[in-house]
Every structure is written in C-alpha cells, then in structure tokens.
Length: 109
Image 1 (cartoon, rainbow, N blue to C red):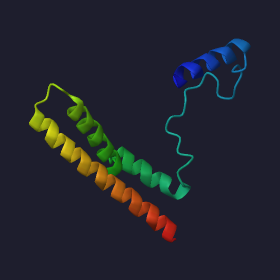
Image 2 (cartoon, rainbow, N blue to C red; image 1 turned 90 degrees about the vertical axis):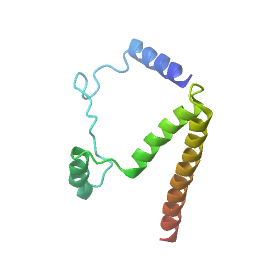
Image 3 (cartoon, rainbow, N blue to C red; image 1 turned 180 degrees about the vertical axis):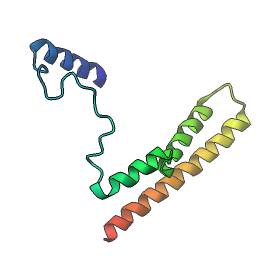
C-alpha cells in the first residue's frame, strides 16, 4: 500500500516538474556509496566484498528465509517441515542471543 502511495506522489511531483534539473540528473546512480562507512574501514570493506566475504549475519538471514520457505511448503513431508522448524527456531535464538550480547556490550561502555 505504501508503494502505491509513494508511486502516486512521485508521479504527481514529476507532473508538476518538481523533480526536473536535479543534481546528477541523467547520470547512473552510485549504488556502491560507502559514505556511511568510516573512512579508515572503506578499503578493508571493499577488499572483503571483492573477495566474496559475507558477514555471518547475512548468511544466517539467508538461511532463515530458506527455512521459512521450507516450513511453509505444504508439499514437503511433515518430518522435513518439523526438522526445518526446529532448525529455524534454533537459528533465530542464536541470532537474538548475539543481538542482545551486542546491545549489552554497548550499554556497558
């Protein structure tokens, strides 16, 4: 629903000419913008990214999505769904534990 509202607002702004002659108009978007990454970490992050490194959190989120699809798939047998549900619960608990540990560490500073 929000996408429809946003699309309508953008179309209205385009019709009024409010989005014309903006800086960078006609140039490709810079999707690799690392302005929010501290300058001393940018080179390291770029090297890791180019080497194919993915943070463990991203791997875990990908696995969660796969397990959720398996659990919701009625075509799978009950044993496979049950095993996936248990693994999903364990993985979510592991992520939450890591999240809370990080929060507590920051609060302790």
